[in-house]
Image 1 (tube, rainbow, N blue to C red):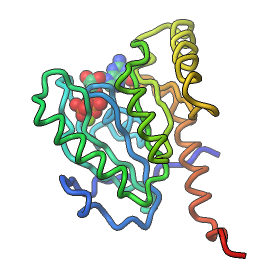
Image 2 (tube, rainbow, N blue to C red):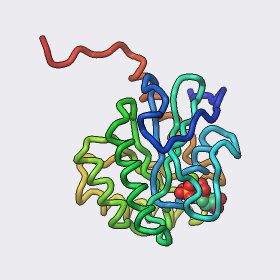
Image 3 (tube, rainbow, N blue to C red):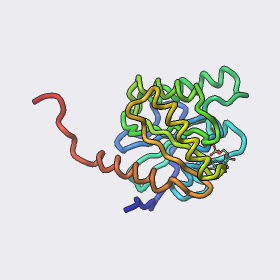
Image 4 (cartoon, rainbow, N blue to C red):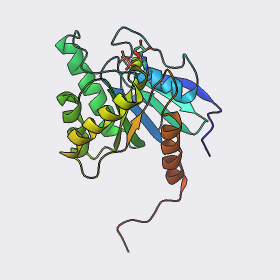
Length: 210
Ligand code: GTP
Ligand code: MG
């Protein structure tokens, strides 16, 4: 059964990872190039048009924004990267803020790496995923703006991306095709989050010592 979103509210914006909410709930963060559709996807998932602020101008989201869903899990809107017009200093600030967030957040269950379905795989995104792999940060790939292509074109684009990914990844990370405009991909992503939330609720498995 599809997880119902009964409650979704904004909690806090931060420029320091240390001030993020206490990490006692499962957390899912959204990252990707500026303008790729992170904030729009969050709004689509929780069915609130204006929960996360969106804009046609890249660079809208500049802080770490926590939202709490159904009183039990967090969604996090991260600032976009690779915004061509951003000064070097801004880019470095982004990297250190987001890097620290990704390395420190013990409750991060999955990072959603968003890519625009219309563009071929970018080296910057692939390198970023490689870094996530090295740091053992779990991630999934989300294709955004699928409404801009025909279903056939979208399937071909995903196939091409899968081929590129399979050069570096085995198994492949989960892939989701979405459109914030039509809501496509919503059930798949909420289903994924619901499954991970269930694992979180289960009593901790004893590891290591026998
Ligand atoms: P930053 O916060 O600036 O990094 O951007 P973001 O990744 O949060 O993107 P945002 O959600 O603000 O969307 C950027 C632009 O893309 C807006 O004009 C959105 O309306 C548009 N957009 C986002 N998702 C979709 C989609 O699925 N389909 C279409 N057609 N447009 C989209
Ligand atoms: Mg945004």
